Length: 281
Image (cartoon, helix red, strand yellow):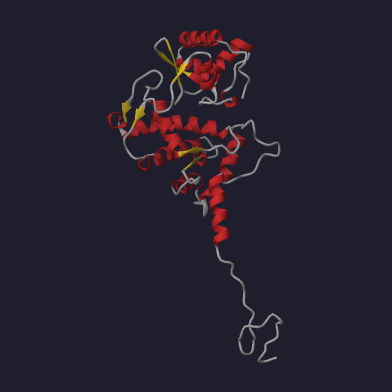
């Protein structure tokens, strides 16, 4: 994470002024940031993309803007720095509207419109994870971020729509000839779930026998493709999520060990440790 010690409140105000002058879309595109999803900076009654504002404030402080991949926009990242400088930054679940608008219901805009919008934000969220070696996002986290990032929310249970959104992300990756970013999204058990195999089948024409092993390799390909700055010099290794790896290790330890029993070829009785049948000699 960059050292933001040089950033002052005035530097943030300069970044906010540039944001206002250029407009949100141009500002974000110019510096390579996505829309704020959970942590929104509020100033003079207006909402701003907190991570992008801090990244550009770094430019006013040091001459070089911080890149999106270099730091987090969360509670311990941009939000913490901005709050320390006296700015208001909303928390996930504050029910604050997305930057630039108010909440809309998915039932009002239509399922296709909502899911296309969610998929676009999901891609940005998963790109952030791809730039962290062995980084992943949970279904629950992704669901919260896509709704916050689009301003479109739903009362449907997560399992009824998140798979379709991830499928759209995977299809877009396939179209771009990229590794599947959907491999970076896991459930509470650390698994990609059954829907991942379907997306792999569409992208590569083959359904993996073990979706999680495939996803581990695909995640590594994502880290390499999208330039995770903490990727080891040797290129890294594929890995299951820690929780899933621990679950599989416990399962292996609990499995009974099958041992072959040596028997006499004549009477077919079990042989003693000497290997010589007590009956047949």
